[in-house]
Image (cartoon, rainbow, N blue to C red; front, top):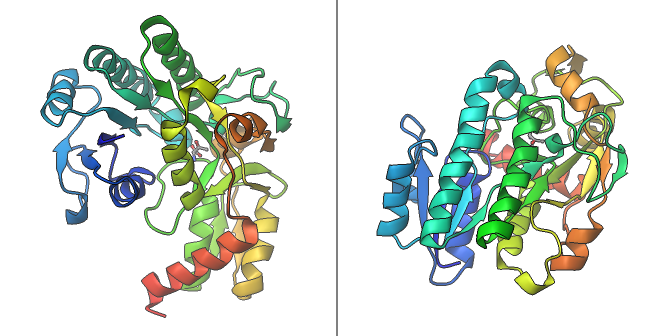
Amino acid sequence: MKNVLVIGSTGQIGSELTMKIRNEIPGSTVVAGYIPGALLAVSLIPAEIADVRDSKALADIVRRYKIDTIYNLAALLSAVAEKKPLLAWDIQMNGLINILEIAKELGCAVFTPSSIGSFGPETPRKGTPQDTIQRPRSMYGVTKVATELLSDYYFHKFGVDTRSVRFPGLISNVTLPGGGTTDYAVEVYYSAVRGEEFVCPIGPGTYMDMMYMPDALNAAVAIMEADPSKLVHRNSFNIASMSFEPEELFSKIREYEPTLRVRYEVDPVRQAIANSWPDSMDDSCAREEWGWKPTFDLDTMTRDMLEKLRKRLLNA
Ligand code: AKB
């Protein structure tokens, strides 16, 4: 990776990934792709408007900056994709095929994340295997399975270097997610630090895989840097670090913020999606094929989240 384009650079993953690659990959140029109207931090420059649906403009950026690796992070998350399924399809699928065509023509590697959302109710819930039933019932999930298949198709058919991981719910203290099923696990930390009551849209007992952002960013970089001769799989690898249900998360936060108050107001759309997702994935293929290893668990993540948010939100 030398000249990298991050599409969706103002989003939850993109805002941190852009800086990480710049800081950690020596000699890299990272172009921050954003859509008009997005709030662009000055630190993200060089930046270019990069709408995945505008393939001519994208190809122009790739040519001008001699891009060799594209991180395609443009997506509507699961709950919002249920409300706008056609827009989700347009961004996730038409956008992806534009990127893959450009990659084929101009010789780029492509990372397009998949998700626990690519699984469905028939998938084994515990220890979800790498290769298993993927029959999601949400539009987000449908686009994620299609993303995996299309990315593998471009690899096998045209030799495009596509690779990716299935992200769990991502928890970060920097940029808030928007419209996901797992967002509650981020938002509750903000409520805890602000001393506000948290209204939880996901019911007690609902387990989902979750991950702290630093581990997710490590995975996104490591998979693209991995030795291709060791990769049996490509699109996409299960990666896991922790799985919890809301009460376990709240008890952990209360160890450090004892006054956290929570009330449940279950959102039927998010709950139905969460019920169809795995409880915990088996990530042994990622560990074996490219050395994946998470560094945060629920306790270390909670301490770090609270410390960073107290500093940022309360100056404490
Ligand atoms: C969502 O909840 O939609 C995302 C995901 C798990 O892919 N965070």
